Amino acid sequence: MRLVALVLVLLTVSCSRVPNPELPSSGPRLVVLSPALAVILKDIGAGELVVGRHNYDMVFPDLPACGQQGSIDYEQLIAVAPTDILIEWGAMPLPKRLKALASANDWTIHRYELKTLDDILLAASELEARYAPRGPDEPVAARCERAWARRDHLERAGRVLLLAAVEPPTALGPGSFHAELLERLGATPAVTDGGPWIELGLEDIVRMAPDAIVLVQPRKNGQGVGSVGTSALEHFGPLARLHVPAVENERLAVLDAELYHTPSTATIQLAEDLASVLERWACEP
Image (cartoon, rainbow, N blue to C red):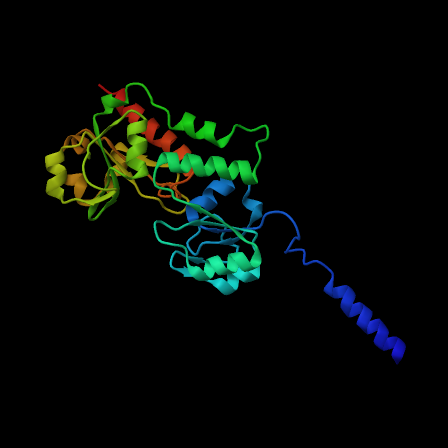
């Protein structure tokens, strides 16, 4: 009996020392409390390091959700045993409990703000340097800068109204990365005053008389350039009946890729799609 008991004790000790394959003892383990930062990590090839996600994450659906701004699931956070927490938290101070747990568990908190294209570029470059050291592929900074670069003659497309919704019409105005991207590409915005999201009335759009309207309306399995011209009319609701140059000349487009409202490396393809539509209109008589 003593021999059996000794064997059982040894087995118990041995089993307790077997590492959990899901909890490696070394290497970064990232909890990403920002849908946009998650997109960047996936795009730079560091997605396999992510072990926990934001509640509204769009690229790692199979990982445990660890909360959102103002509501962190601390129990889940502890369970996934991160080394690093990447967070987009705005101007608010970080929760005291989060900072206390980070100190107690030796977690490193990396805080980001993603409002402008420069914010996106800085975050992407830092994340690539830290978690996806440069290999043979083009660095993410170079990809961003090339995609966002000014195109020739886009001003010929006229004054462009960017919308996030049509009922009610909601413009993507100054302070939004969409509006910044439009200007960076060399196009002329129809909205030059106000904030990032501006609710408009139909009469406002009539007075504005935009030459082109681009609706950025992400959807699951969106194609990027969803529709242009006549085929886009059905997406504009009451705007499609307005007497404005954009409607009369059928300079309407829908950009519908799922990630086009995330301030992330998704702006690389957003820039390409937006530029392709504007270039088409710029070449028209």
